[in-house]
Image 1: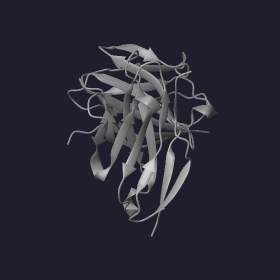
Image 2 (image 1 turned 180 degrees about the vertical axis):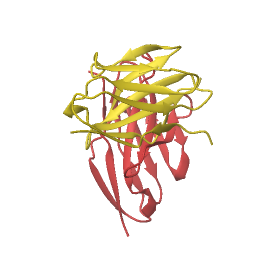
Image 3 (image 1 turned 135 degrees about the vertical axis):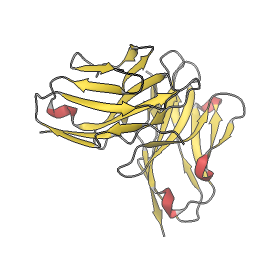
Image 4 (image 1 turned 90 degrees about the horizontal axis):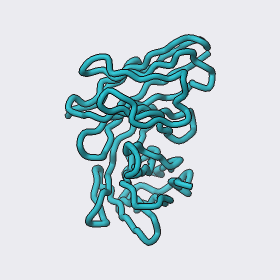
Length: 112
Length: 114
């Protein structure tokens, strides 16, 4: 069964450093999403991406964040200058023509 | 304001007992509705979904959910809980006036007594 994969599973970085979180969506999906979950809190939408551009973003997704689909398979989330409050689990999701989203296992980002 | 509410933070049931997890939403029009399950340290697995039609939907692992438009609810049920069902359950909605992003409730943690 096709699945969404994410790398790395855990990333530790120092405040102010740039991080890139990687995702490989399900191969025939066209819509891609990033969400985050701060420990003990609900899952929050960050950004949606379709046809090589952002289709919607939340207030959390400020200028420090960017997304890219550099090739036909990867979908990345970059945080330019990490802050302590960026520590969270980041989930990638994808969907096809129907509306259900399939999630990857997540990347735990720890900013020290 | 648009919101998804899961009023129960924790629920404890005995193995073999029935289960109902509550979810209410507040949106102008009926959004698409979902339940996801998250085991500790794991990602989110889709349990079931409602788009239209029959208001009682069946999902994986023996779960079902009923959409009630008059109550803006989408409660999750299971007739007999297994110890492996212990996890966190999230109700989510996808408003149709957006990129179908998911708006999640705060989750209900299910504990199962032997």
